Image (cartoon, rainbow, N blue to C red; front, side, top):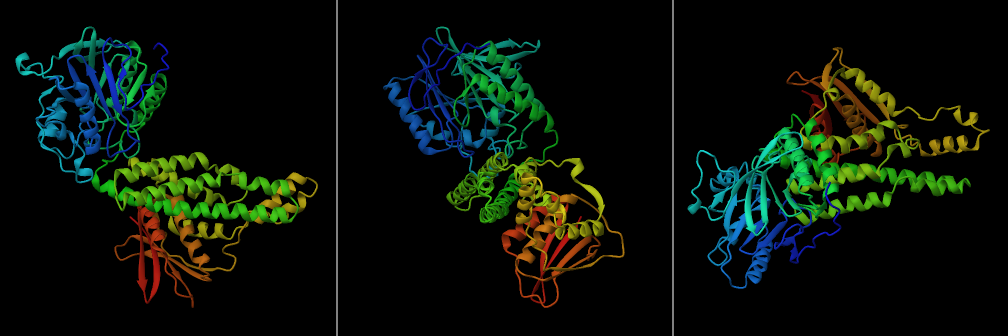
Length: 567
């Protein structure tokens, strides 16, 4: 087991590396971002090593000045190492390869090939249209045994070694002497990318993106491999214990205590085992998902507003009826202030990006979804809202994360009768959740009476003044889709029409021009003009695509017609 070590190396200062005789580290830790990585500068008596120079020119210049000041004019070589070749770790590296600084680039052979041939897929440059720099890699780790590099041609002494793991597996490593008994060990840790490398110096381990490799928006990118990732994680946990590693220094985020990192890694390995058929996370999916993320926020925000208003309404009327204790407890059921701050944070983030799309938006939206899931507990307000309403918000958040991964659970898509599903949805809209005689049965129990009273106050008969006309197809239209998601979307559309005081809504099932089963929804009779807001249209389009079909808005004789089409 690792020896306890409370010392956490502070950023932006030279610090001795524990477990070494004469090695120091200076690290530049950025706020977690998919746009640029952390940078770690290692100083040994006879050389400097810069791990992951990054993308930000200001960060690169900061690292340059730190090394030049420490070098004090001496001709000490500087080597540029990568944990892997994704652009956020190296895009501005050429700024350290000029004649003044003369950084010598050394990385994994796959990374070297991708960088020198400007492989936009493996480097992920095609995700945001980045222009790859012209770089010459000086040398590589893990040379092909059949094509070794002559020692006189290599700028750095690299020795070969092996480490035997507890399970009997033997893994190769490269070793670079740093002077005296100090050294840096290099391990191949594919999974996040095929060229991923982990470095060990003293009691520090530099793992790149190993700790976030199963994160939605990261998993599934070009070169991602779940089983290789599991093997890499298990191997590095074992190596970490053997080397008594104190801290993990990741490619993004703060330094992590090794025991805490081990728990993260074990959870990640278990998650990776189940991510067996992810869709390729390419630029097209990235742009689609970033748009969907913003639509998700708009829809979730409107639902939170409904929740907040309902809580205030119930609290107000209970207070009016003299139930002061219960009235005061209602607003505390959910931390609506925290929800508001979370939504505002996302809005602020989107504004700061100034219309940007892609991985940054997706990453933030995933954080948002998971944060809201921790705050929002449906069981606490189940007596105040219809079950389908609560299911809708939970599904919004869960489905978004699943879509980012590119996975769909098999039991979500079923074959069902469209006519029956529509009838069920309509029946649920006018169903009063409070049993008419129930309140009289609770008169002898104060608690039950207040519970029932609260339920009745909370109930909002949104469709009490709405007349539905349903023209069902004579043909039994069997469709394959996510039934609950479709019904949730239909409810969401009908709610918008009811809120707009549309008193007559017509629904009709049949087959469209292509022969596909469809449901059409129109405002019937002499309904006043109505236009569904664009954010709601986008939400329905994205969600219907996930459910297994399409949603479209059609302008017909100056009126809008809405159609759910099943593939």
